Image (spheres, rainbow, N blue to C red):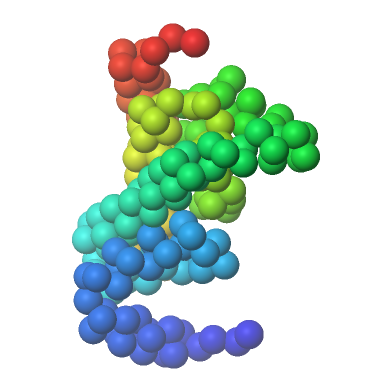
Length: 191
């Protein structure tokens, strides 16, 4: 598929006209339908609305979608979870792994744009991980991921020309990871 830069900017300008609602709704839909390209949604929002507004709309939508999927799985899967675990041992192992590693693993998985977000939502919902752990790991991890993609998408040519921005991103990830560990120690129950 060959897309010219002019076509991409035309699409983004048309997308901007659809407003904030679409910028918020698309990341929510991506949580339910992983076929939607989150990277393109984040980048499109950053280009259409600017880095900070694009970041905020996408981050809010992505977190809302993830929390909705988690809540739906947690609420409506209780009856068939045991049968599912009995039938598919890999799902039970993945669920136990989430429970054992908690915040750190969820946070790191949320930071990477290529991690299977929908699968993470479902497995976390099936596990016994606490809502607080899931909430904080999702909120902070998605903030890192969406910020990085928004930062890059807002001005890709400048990002390539200035490697200092990459160092800034890495420092931001380390800072948010540290904040997440502090939240985990202070507010989350010890296992």
